Length: 604
Image 1 (cartoon, rainbow, N blue to C red):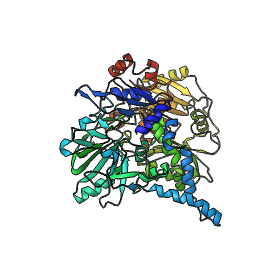
Image 2 (image 1 turned 90 degrees about the vertical axis):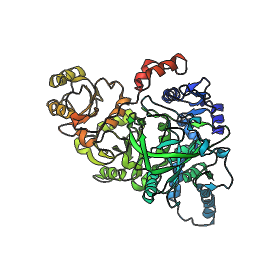
Image 3 (image 1 turned 120 degrees about the horizontal axis):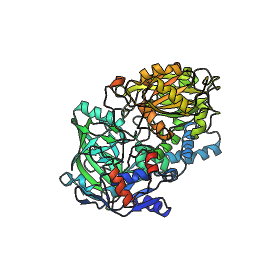
Image 4 (image 1 turned 45 degrees about the horizontal axis):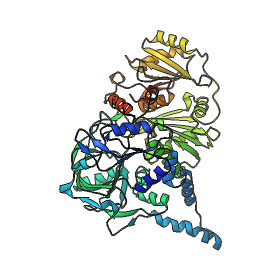
């Protein structure tokens, strides 16, 4: 970590904050603003404090480590596409013919030895300082509270190391941990995660589960923790492949879990399967709060650290975030592995305002009728891709998937109700739109092939259409039509919800000559002039089985759901900054933003 910070400072990628900043909201708000700049910088807070507890911490806090594409590429040592090429080459490796080709293959095979982590006999740098169980005080660490409604302070960049009950498998995951007190943490591993599977083994055996949580060290460690590797594969093998040198591990002091020797801080402990506690709320990367739920509790048995540690953290919420750049690396590097399931896949992309698992764009080479729908089922059956809610497939002649304007125009000329596949399956534990947790609707759109023939019979201007809709339902407050030059213009409607939107859709069919795609959002909570945040809202708020109609035209209900819709769960609130904290930071010159910036990214 120290070497990386020194390099980032030399190369102009690091911004140092010398003024004391509070771990309660201030540091997180500064980082949240910074990551929305282009390009943003890594932030090093030299003097974190907790004014409520009267603490001045003796270790700095680093935020926004994956601050932009260029910095992220530096961490990888080359472009992620180059790493993907190396993986693809290995996957297609054939026995060489002839001595020259065999000799040429040796360096590649020799390099593979670096994949396997190396276990050291001595203690590591991360164990220069040891706090035994009786000395543990988590208040020594500048653990952040990132959002006003959070249930407390959370460790947000924790590398969570676990192992199976039989000791044959070790896992590295990235899970948040809520600090309850000086010695206990809430362990938020979701039901689909590998560590949760290990937890089930310990619970069934009636044994406590050892856990070690590392913070800091090489930035690639935490990236590996969120990589979608197959079950049973230790994520630090990926580290060795990318770095071309093995991860160097040391054994934890109070358990048998091995962690990288150069991380800054290690929190060791055990999880009792019989003890659960309420975890949350937490302002999450969906841009909504995840609500209170019972999760396992980690009892800390030791804390070790370097002599001069750096505490690494992140802040999540509405896009764009640090995970935009972390996800970019994942997206590019794992393309060859995804192609093994879908061989005619050309490329794919997960826009950050689609919150990754909520929206995926994919290019393919269709060879027969229904090929795109076959791809949809393949995607929904592969590892973490199974959590994708909305998948749009285009063919090879489509524009670059990151050219959003051109891609949108291309797909709108190819959408028709018959090309929509609506089904159901598992959804991410963080998804709030489905009628029940962990299972919900999915939408696939086949935009391969020729353009559709027919557009609207008559396009009205926004004023005339608003008047016509207002005559049907007085709760229509505003509307805006987009891409009216395509075969499927989109009409975004701001609606003050007094009845089910489905009932509104019943009446709206009278305007079928003028409409092709209608998307309804809540009035007063959405800016119709801000398509970036509208995509975020729609991708988050819809369950395809409940909220999409295909006839007589496509209608989408992206409003917040309640009892009017038969929705019985608690609908979470948006993640919003604390206005007083933002004002204080602006007055002190720690952030420089105007009202337009605040509105653009939905900060308040």
